Length: 318
Image 1 (cartoon, rainbow, N blue to C red):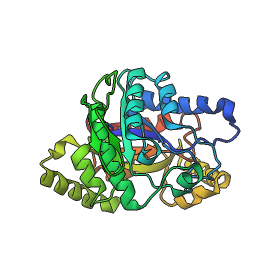
Image 2 (spheres, helix red, strand yellow; image 1 turned 90 degrees about the vertical axis):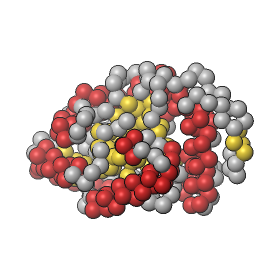
Image 3 (cartoon, rainbow, N blue to C red; image 1 turned 90 degrees about the horizontal axis):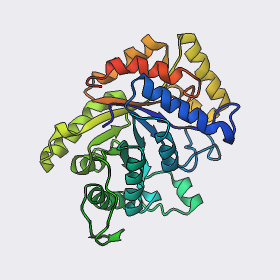
């Protein structure tokens, strides 16, 4: 399971067209693996997110990309952060993730959430529904997917999905961890306690203890061993050899992609000692690890390596 994950959230790089795009992505994955990250993650979207760029900006399909990255790496786990359940039928998703596990030699992880990007659904023809609809779908999907990944032939006659004796062959190489993204204390963290191996939360740092307490309460109520669940915290960072260089690269990214301005205040920005100090405080909140992305400068050669070398010593048990 993830303790130090590197997420690649955007594919819009200065001076890089379609022909050179994958090379930049693959280099980031290789740097992540070589510098101590244990997981490489990509977004599962078809349009760029509003806080990261224009919807028409470049966006690669998640599982095709992860399968390609499997051929350039040998150790890191490969995952979406996170798959929108609304984009694929759960039986198809189970099959896709199992195939990723097979082609990567047992390195797949399923990151999943309810889905939220309404523009993407409306434009591309995916049913969006209400908030309640999407969480009901997610719960039914988890019942189907966990069965297929764990070796049973699940049947379900639900409100949203109907499957009968669903076969998943070949089986995964090993046990595929399931990570649920989101920090909703009533629905999401209850599903983590019931179905998942990992929780990836997004919230203000001072809210982390409350999220952990909510997860603890769900585990106690459901009889789940809380120690079986890893909790990671999602962050964004811009690291460079000097503090001034990091600030400059962050400013240049905002000038290039104006939508990043909304995230500028929450960006952890600085040299290695600056960044390490922030993550030491995050780890002190009780999380087991972090997932990080570098939308401003992850494409610059050496930045992901510097990030991994800075953070890996801070993660217990890595």
